[in-house]
Length: 155
Image (cartoon, rainbow, N blue to C red):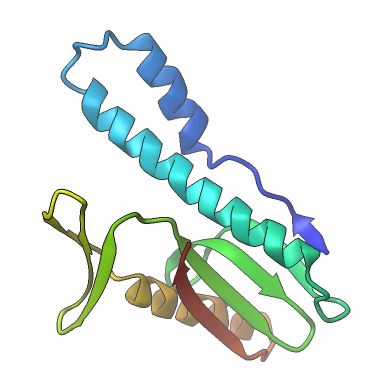
């Protein structure tokens, strides 16, 4: 059951409005358009995964939550959270084009674009680890001891 449905990130409408107000030749316009496309791609990827999960036969009392922001020992904005009385699953979805490579040391994601250029991105593995730690800490501080796991994948 979808408990918190898919909604645009708060930043998306703000970026859309700002890009409409700026003159196309403004120095910030290209940067804002890139960020807007990145936000929209992320939303599209999460919507795709949420649609798939909503169509699945999930165990009874399993709830789907989209874009959950929390703070415990770390700040978290979890893209998709599956919550049940017995476990929690954090899904970190990335909608990234190009070939993806992972480095272990340092942990990073490298995207090779169609133009052959490498772009070094933050590690989604680190993000999942941080969110897993944060959610475990938050639950334990409330007296709940549920197994929490996280998974990254690209759509």
